[in-house]
Structure formats: C-alpha cells, structure tokens
Length: 153
Length: 172
Image 1: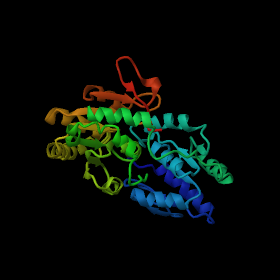
Image 2 (image 1 turned 120 degrees about the vertical axis):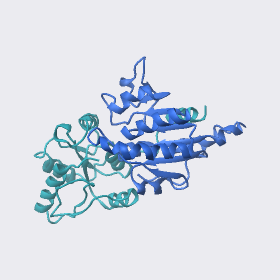
Image 3 (image 1 turned 90 degrees about the horizontal axis):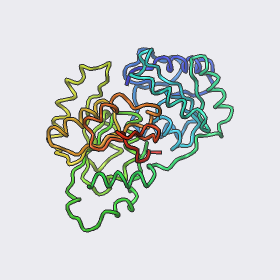
Image 4 (image 1 turned 120 degrees about the horizontal axis):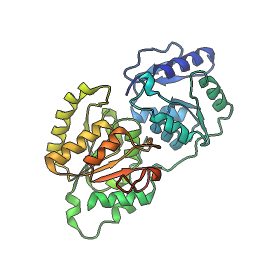
C-alpha cells in the first residue's frame, strides 16, 4: 500500500490540539511522516486491529471499503478521507467513487480536503451514537450460493 | 475483519448430493490487502468443506483463515513494477504446488497474475470478482481480467454489460 502522509499529518495535528483524546494510528509501511502527538505503529494484525476498533469511539481512515466494512461490522462512526492518485496516494481515484457511494450513509463523515478533516472529526464526535448501520459478517446468501456453484461445477 | 469459526452449514450442505468428486476439488483463493482481503473474507462460507489454500500479502492474515493453507505473495502495482520479479516466481511455486482446479479472487493486480498463471500452468477455472470499491468503473486489473477469467464479475449492477462483466451480487 502506498503511503498516506497527508492523513497521518492532519490527524496528528488534531491530536496535538486535542490532548484529552487518546488517538492511535496505524500509518502503513511506507509513510515518511512520523506522528508526534499520537501513539502509532506501521501495521497491526487484523485481530488486534479489530480489538482496537472495539475500544474506540471513532475511526478515521482513507476511503477504503475495508475500513468502511470494519466500521459497519463493529458499529462505529467513521471519518473517510479519500486518497488521490494525483498526489501519488493510490494508483487510481477510485476512493473518490467510494466516498460518493458512502457519503449519505448513516455514521459516515466524508472529508474531501485537509481543511475539512477537523470539522468532520468534530461532527462525528458530537454524535457518537450515530454509527454505521451494522451488517452481518458474510455476503448475502444468494451471492454465496451462486459462487459456491461456480466453485463446484 | 474477524470470521466466526463455523461457517453457516447450510451453504456446505446444499451440495451433499452424493457427488464424491466435489470433495477432491482444490481451490486457490487470492486477494491482496485491505478491502480486497475484506471482500474475500465476506465470501468465506463458500469454501466450507472444500480443500482451499489462501494467498494474500500479509502473513498475519493467516489467522483469519486458520485450518487452511496460507501463502504470502508480494504486492505489486503500476508504481512498483519491479516487484513483479519477486511476485511471479512466488505465484508459480504456489500454483504448481497447489495445482488448483479453481482460482477465485477479489483483486487486485497481483491476483491478476495469479489467475493468468493458474490458467497457463494448470488450466484452472478462473473467477474474478472486481472489488466493491469500484463503484463507477472497473479497476484497471478488473478490466484486464476479461482475458484470463472464465467467470468475470462486477459487484455493481450498473457496470454489467452484455459482453461482460456479469453481475451476480455483492459482498454487502
């Protein structure tokens, strides 16, 4: 995964201003910016990451569907900040598509720019009870059945 | 994304129609990290009772599919092409060791190489499911998958066309 220093830097700045909040960051293998105001690690195994989510009030993430699914499965609010291909943050701008898809969902707060991030975080924290609608752990049964048939036949 | 230990039994039961041959089928399930792996995990019940090996980009993902063989592959992208030099031998080794009858993937670029190699080396049936993040257009890998996928799917009905990809549903 490409680095996403823009997100890490802004959230670190936010954490510096909001000392009363505990902010923990997974920043990825290749980021150059190292946070000063929050506890951070490069990568957490999925089990530990999920346990961390369960302890949290809010997720702040790139606009990746994996992050959104985790927020849904764990019933948390989430702030999504799309990676941009023009800044070398991803190979394409599909996170803008994801953001447009998810922007009206309950518990989802989109920030399109660095400037919008703090207000999106504030909006999410102001209503911690508004979480992403929870989903079952697996895909809908008809889709699973059809794929199962494709595996077997 | 955690996966409960026991996948829904009903999915596994539906094909116990006396065809013993289905037991011996070997499946290779491939996905790169993040949302690609999350999509694959949401399909986990389709693998119930089958001989499946998983391939992804982080060793720690193995714990989510414990009880199955697990291989790590090098992630590649258009910005990181030299990684292909590492990836291809890894995948050749996995494909020749597993000799899968079917390869199924939710992307991305490294998985496209896995499909092509499995088709070329062991004539596997190949299934590409473009990741759910590709809402308005297929990913670049997803477009190229038309050349190597026997079953070529998008998770968005609006992206289905007469000449493919097809739409069978989505992980949500």
